[in-house]
Length: 80
Image (cartoon, rainbow, N blue to C red; front, top):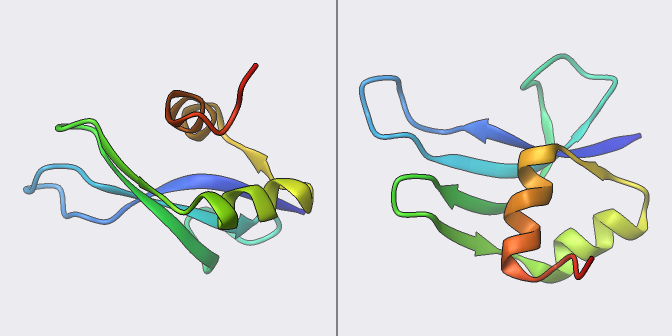
């Protein structure tokens, strides 16, 4: 099964930046990602979303983490 989660891409001394990735839940935490689908910058609150890729993973049964769900909801992917 797959999840959509955040992976930090900057070092601790730098400002945080995260990549939203599809990961296999059977792999170790922050292990090999299946596909990078977008980027999130919490400082500027900017997101760069790949809507078709996110929707494709959701149709295949991927479960977004709470944070990814909130980011996607603000962007209009979830209309609930």
